[in-house]
Each structure stands twice: as structure tokens, then as C-alpha cells.
Image 1 (cartoon, helix red, strand yellow):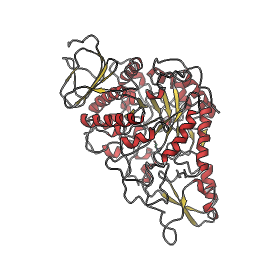
Image 2 (cartoon, helix red, strand yellow):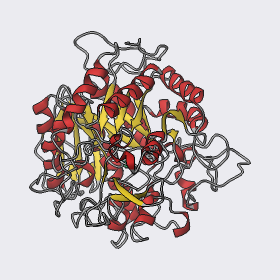
Image 3 (tube, rainbow, N blue to C red):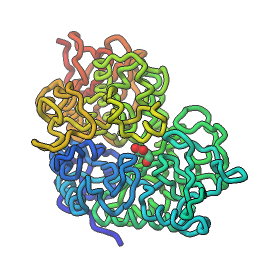
Image 4 (cartoon, protein in one colour):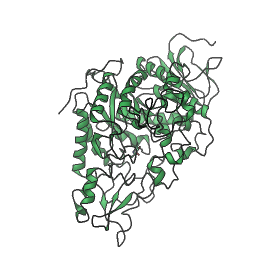
Length: 585
Ligand code: NOJ
């Protein structure tokens, strides 16, 4: 059954019609090719009921803020029933809201309110695995050992162990959080039994995507939420659903995103996965206002990523080559070129991402020496010297670069405030499963998940309502009093006002969003490109001060220009080309 698009959206943009204002003319490119999507990590966004955990009530109260910021859509991280062993990416029931976040009527109201404000809504679909508390997994456990070939176990990847007594895992695959990717179950009769696969925590058993029942269930889940009005899904671990037949050992094959020659891996980025997305695309296209997917696929190269966004597969995919690229002009330019070239070849719109709830925040990455290695994990950066003000300068310049590039962009909550990673959370508050599963060697991702500071001079900084019973689930640094939404609002030099101005300009300017770019000559260490009509972006990564091109007018700058009206290091500007020349002051 197809469904009419949600109604009542206010029209905020001449270029991208919001929900309820679907443009059916052939000429207008679809909204998602240019969309700026704001990632709501719901547990840390806004707490409506005072239990220290973000929730739907909190999100609803802050929707006007998001509409005012100027984004086009929200991606809400999993809000489904979950034991929260992995921040909700361990789903026990995809059709029920976790009580810590609210209820299904709350979710329905949030979606409708977002639409009324002109914001599209994407949810997070977690198809690779479920929670060990999901009824399917409980049934699978109850079905053994006699039921080792049962329909209940066939939804997952259960195998006998290796060795005479089956005491060795079925293969050498490693969990993403550390240790073996296999756990042995104790059967109902108390004896050690089969092993099940979990590419993540043991509480996240992998589903078997060769099983038609699994496929049908996920189509039904998507339809459930589509009927409730959501505009699409972010696909968790989109590169992991297909496993090599026979489950061969990985034998040291390096998983993505390590750049270099790709060697076929037994469970990451396998060609068989694409057939699943073709069926999903057909489902999305059934709707009058077609639904949309963005894939989370960590792959070796932009070429491999482009395979996920072929015309009959996912609409978009996160471009993680961008955040893993160091703040170095040549490296950035070649990453941008590779992304544009590979996406153009399949007719897809690129996306640009600086960070998310799994990576170190870019302010802290860019504060470190660049080009020394990957800086995505906290443990990558902790040992390196930091220059925080430089990190913020670069992050602000990167924001202008990202928002000027062709395609769509993602903003992770707090990015618009210039929040740094919280690098010194005490051991006893860490909740990332990687902390325990690595034997306390990997500090994990909690430092980018600290609750958002909204207002006031001290924690909880308006994250929880006045008189809240419990402090925020992760402690906020006292220094964040200068980084609250209230403190930054109206301060022309703040990162929040930079994002607001940039997003407003992006909506107004016909050159921005989907389209092409043309590189302009620039000194070594700088990037300059034009977009038509009449726009250019200059990013000074590491050159001496760079001249603003003659015959142009500065629209916005990520930091102060020099006294001679030049762009200093770690600064970006947008200029109107063909406008009245601005004379140096
Ligand atoms: C990717 C999600 O972004 C991450 O937070 C989660 O731990 C894994 N997938 C497993 O679902």
C-alpha cells in the first residue's frame, strides 16, 4: 500500500521541498540530493522527564531549534525497545519505543511535529543484528540442542564449534568490539552447545540474510514506520549483512576502512549485499513521496562506496573517506575528487560527514598533528599533543567546506556548537561495550556522546528540566558553559551563528547543494573551487594568507580575515563571484 506524503509542512526552501510539499515536476532534483541532515543521538540530545537520559519529549521541545538552525531533515538514532547494551543498536522490538525514550504515540507526534516544521525524519534501521533479548533469539535458544537445524536458529548464524568437542569457535572472525565474533550457548539441558555469530557485542546476534523470513520481516518493519510517516532510514552496518558461503576464516584479511588494495573479506562489503538493497529500493519507490535510504558502509575506497548508491540501490551513503582524510590540502582535494568522480559515474549525490556518534569529534581530531594515522578513535588521539583553538578553527573551516561541496551533508548534534570530544571521562561512567569487551584497553565512543549543553552556567546545562532527579547519564565538563546554545546564540563569532548563517546562505544560494564544482587555481596548501552560478569557496589549509579572488564579495568567513582582507591559515570563505569587488580595508 502506498501512502500520501505527510501533510502540513511549512515551505522553507526554494530548492528542497520539505515533507508534505513533494515536488512532482520532472525538473526539480529530489530533496535528498541536497539535504543537510542533523543527527539526533537521542540519548544525549534533550531530556524531557528529568531522568538524565534524552528522550522523545526532549526532542519535541527542541524541534523549533532544529528548524531554526536551517537543516532539512533529522536522522534519529535507534529509539526502539532495547536493553541498551550498545546504545540502542541492540534492538529487542522494532515496533515498540523504549520506555526510557517514550511511547509510540510520542514518536508519532514527534514525526508529525517535525513535518509541520518542514523537517523530514529518517530513523535508524539495524538489520545486521538484533538484541539477545529479541523474541527471535530467545526462541532460537529455546529450540536447541535438538533444534540446531530448526527454523528458530535458522534466523541467526548458529554453527557447531570446531575441534572434537566443539570447543573452538567455528572460524577466526573477530568482533568489532574485541574478542571472538562467536559465543557458545548453554543449551536448555545445561550442556555446552552451538556457537552463534555476533560481529558486534555478544548481546547482538547476527541475523542470517540468506533466510527469506529475515528479509520479509525487515520489509514489514520498514512498512510499519513508513506508514507512520517516516521519510526513510539510515542503514546500520550496510556493508555487513552478507557473509561468505561456508563462513571461511578471515585469515588476517584487513577490514575496511584501511585504504589500499582491497582483498575480498568474508563478511565486510561483499558483492552479495547489493541484491538486498535492490529490493529495498523498489519498496521505497512504491511510495508517492518516495522513501529514502542512507547507508552506513565502511569500505576501502570511494569506488566501493559508489556501488551502494547505484541507481537501483540506496539513495545515498555516508562518505567516511572525508572524516578519515587529514587536514592537508592535497589529501583533501584528492578525496573530494575521488568522491565526486565515483558518485558521478553512478549518477548519485555525494554526502559529506565530519563526525558522528562513533568517531572522535572533529574539533579534537583537527587539534592533533595531521597525517600521522587514523584519528577516528579516542585511543588514536589521546597520545598526541593537542592545540584546541586550532582544532576549532579548522573545524569551522571544514564546516564551510563541507556545506559548499556538491551533494548533501550531515551534522552530528553539537557539531554546530563546536563541541570537543570529552577525553577525560572517568572509567566508571564509560558505557560503550567496547570498554568492557576490550578488557578496558579501548576507551570507546562515550566522549562524543556527552549530553548537549543548551543553557545555563552549570551542568546539566538545560539538558534536563529544572529540578531533574538525576544528573545527565554522562557528565558534562564545566567548561561547556561557554558552548551552550544560549551562550552562542546572538554571538556573531560563535560556531552556532556560523552554522546558522551558512545554512541560511546554502538554502538561498542557487549554486549550493546538488551539482558540480570546478577547481580554481590556488597556492599550495589551499583549496579553491567555483560553483555555478556565481559562487566560490576558498579554504586555506596550510598556506600563507591567501588573497580573496578579485571581483568577488565575501559572503561568510569561518574566522577573521587578515587586516589586508586575506584568508589566513585554517580559515574558509564563501564568496559571490561577479559581484561588486570588496576592497581591502
Ligand atoms: C554502527 C553504529 O553507528 C554503532 O554505534 C553501533 O555500535 C554499530 N553499528 C553496531 O550496530
